[in-house]
Length: 310
Image (cartoon, rainbow, N blue to C red; front, side):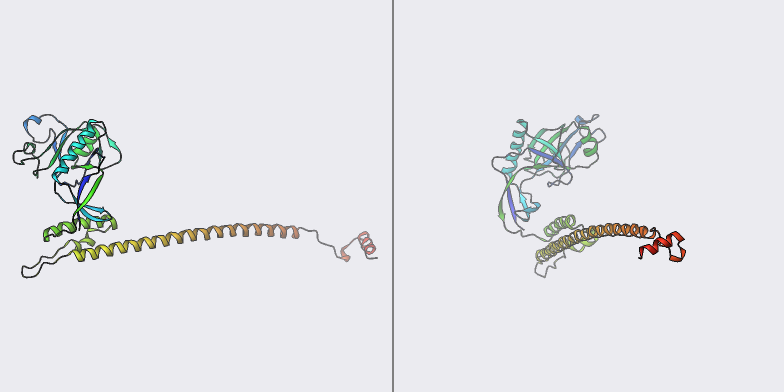
């Protein structure tokens, strides 16, 4: 799978960060609240401050669609610093916003108060803040949460756990393929399976076999599962196309059935009208006065009848 180096698109700025669940940089929010045992200067009051690693240089991030195919993207250290500066430039100009889970709707009462790039993880402020898994080059952002709904319903409940940027990017390919060891392949396959599950609504049982990468004996040559994975992916895409075709056929049949039903309804109405006319004509015929037989006529009627026949 290809790897692309991502860069901020020329003429644009980073103007949004989103508080999300499942950020690309897999470090959790550091939250300061009165019920959590934190450093003394945060004790006895709820500061409503969060810190998170927002970007990590050279981390490969899986994306479902880069130039029409699944791929990894990565940011180098220079680009991370550039994006930090771009965001604060937008914020200074009043153009920056915050959102929840990359929603189009912005939220108010959440604003940046601090940002730095980690130089030495062992001596960094993140240690004092008890942040975990911080690495050299990480971009850390601190936000103040004055929005009651965001704090109570998302931060304190754990509905969000990281920070993710939004920006327009350009991509430069740096490696057409990735040479992965077995553990890296397991991690990659797990990511692809999550994507497949979301696309095809497959349950964990159906995906279980796909998640297993066999251990390779030391005496045997390495086994590359990428060919098998590509086959599975192609089969899933083919099945998806077949399902779409069947759905289109069913929808066309529904339209045809609806047209036929409307025709039958029209024919039923016409038949009911014809029956009503027939009943009315039959009733009129039944109610016509009957002609008397000659023997049943009075003398005067017999005289008149005989005159008609002369």
